[in-house]
Every structure is written in structure tokens, then in C-alpha cells.
Length: 475
Image (cartoon, rainbow, N blue to C red; front, side, top):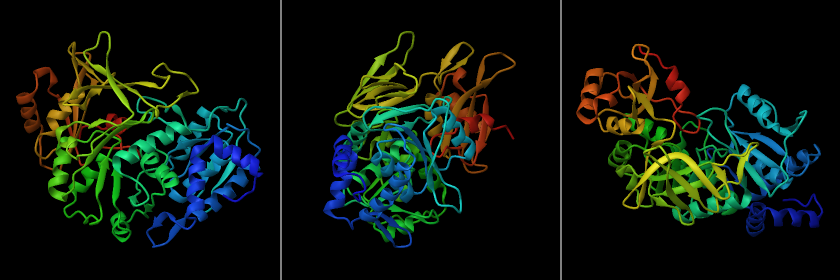
């Protein structure tokens, strides 16, 4: 980065922020090495990215923000996100990494919730920039350099998660080690960098390990992948399912060595069908925003077994009995665990330990998720685990995806089961699905309401959009 600050101040900042120190080291070693490889054949070098970050650092400096202030960063494009991200860290600020595709109303809610001292404005037709905000009681942190991740908000408002930079690097380093990522890889970057998954396996390795990222305009990502000889493709199950529905999927780059799936459960049927039809095994990766990576499958076989692979080196995973429950809670400890929630503390995340809402069991040394606490459905006084029913239905031929949840039962009171099944038109009907369930499930576990859709709704994170599911009406 250009020397706009005093050398002493810059050294102090780099010493306190190892991410900046690593990027600076790469920059000095080879300033013209590419960070981004773009669809039109152009590249963005380290020196070009550093120059863009320095301009934005100057803009932030003019706002006179206190060290440790929160700033809201919502940017969907790779180049401005990386530049704004670096700029915020160079100024000693804590970026709140929000989805760049969020509508204005959602960003306004986030701003009111976290009260950042500045927001990243991205108005079509205008140059993106930082803009100061004024609140009666602005939020700020005076702590170790950190970023704020946002939880998915699937159970309500998203939570802020404070992740110190050393924890962020510990996560990315561990994943890079097990996935064999580094400067020789070329990653097809379709995941949002603001999400924990994309940040850990794309953005941070690009800035600290020198792994070039192939960014596309969205029209034909595999054309760019073939042009730049992509070797690594991290994605989500919804994309893999959509690929399998294509009559003629585009050819993969012959250079591709690794496809990783995370962000949502990968069904055994999808993993097997992809390998048989496309010719590539899918490597399962499991993690959370609070912990970073938890488990990974280097063999590419766990997905077809329905498991998540083994704990990542340095990560300790235990199963904790919960009083009054027949499920065991997944508990994670390790150097990548976040510091805390923001602004409110929560005993689920503290002291390097995260007690998740996932339940699981061990299967030959691999983790198998059995459900989530709070997802169980009370049917006639009997507790039903949606994941069990989803697993059974996913094995029915022609099912591309399935989600099971409870809906009010006005006739009997309590709840009844609804299954939303993604499949090709006319491939399945109620009688076929119901008969399959009766052969494999106890009577109270058979869904009484079944909806058929072309595809399950997902959020921008690739997770199941449960609000959209609840809004579906029988046709």
C-alpha cells in the first residue's frame, strides 16, 4: 500500500493486524501477480488492488472515525469488496460484512440494528464510496482487529458475530491446508465474499496466500473457468441440484480437481447423481459463521454416505447430552471460534467454545447431523425430527430436493407434517409419495400435506429459505 501514513503508524497497524501484514508481504514479493482473473481476459494485480484500497482508505480517513468503529460493507462485486475490505482494516475499523445483493430495506434494518459509523454506498450509475452515519448512540468496538460476520437470520434477526483477525486467519489457513489451496490454485469465485464460506475459502486465501480468483459476469461462469483453467470450485447444494436438472450441463474445465459443497445439507442422492452424471465427486464441508470450518471430507465419498467427514485439524468437536432431550448437541472448540455475538452476549458463544443448535452423532469417525434443536415437530403428542423424513424422501426416485416442516392442524390442534418436494413435473404424485413414506416411516411421521415445486427456494447464501417455504400455498 502506498505510504500515506507515517511509517511508524503503518508498522504499528500491520503488527496488530496479521492479515494486512500478509498481504503486504505478497505485494512486496510480486506486485504484478494477479488477484482477480476476469471474464473479459483482464486481470487485477496486487498493486492495482492496493492502490484502490489506498484511495478508499483516504476517503475513510476524511470521515475521522474512531479506531474500532463499525462500518457496514455490502458489496456484491469482487474488486470493490476486496478494496473496501482492505481499506476498512487499514483504518483500524471493523467491517460488518453484509450480503451485497441485499435490498435497500434490509440494509436499512441492518444499519439501525448495528448503528455503524459509516456505510458503503453502492448506487447504480454512481461511484461506490464510504458515507458517514450519525446515530444518537453509535456502536463501536475497541478491541483486537476484527471483522463482523452476520448469522443467516433463519430464526429471526441476524446476529453480529465478532471474529478477531487471528481467528479468521486460523480458519482460512486450516481450510487451505486440508483443501490444498494456495498460489498454484485458480478458484472459480461464485460465492459471496461477505458470507463466512466465501470469505474463508476465497477472499482470505486470495489476500494472504496469493490464490487467484476467477470472477465472472454470471452469463457463463464455466466459460471463464475453462479460459483461466479453474482448479477449485466451492459451491452450494442448490447449484448442484440445478445443474443436475439441466438436460445438457456445460462441460467442466478439464483442469478442475476439487468441487466442494457447503452452506446447506448435501443429500446422498445429489452427491451420487453428480458423480455418476458429471464425473466428479463432491467434497463435503461443514462449518458455521461462529466457528468457521468444522468438518471436511478429503475423499469425496462422505456425501454419498450422508456424513460430513472428519473434524478439521485443530478443531475439537464433541457431542453434548442435553437434559430432557434425546438429541446430542454439536459443540465446537478451536482457534477459529469467534469471540462473541454483538451487541448482546450469549452463553452459546464464549471462551473459544460454540454450542450450536445442530444435533449429531458419530458414524465411523465422521459426523452425521441428525437435526436442529427447535426444529422438532409435535404431531399428536409425539416428537418428529424433520431430517429423518427428509432423508427417507430424498431416496425416492425423481425427488430433487425436499423440506419437511410443521403447519397448524386446525382440526386436531397441534401440528401436522408438510413436505415440499422439488421434482420434474408429473414425475410424482401424492399417492406415490404417501405410499413410500408408509413403507419406511411410522404412521405419525407420514406427511399429510405434500406440495410439489420445480425447485426449493433458497437464500443468497444457498440455504433453504424457510420463510418462502412457509408462504407456499397448495395449488
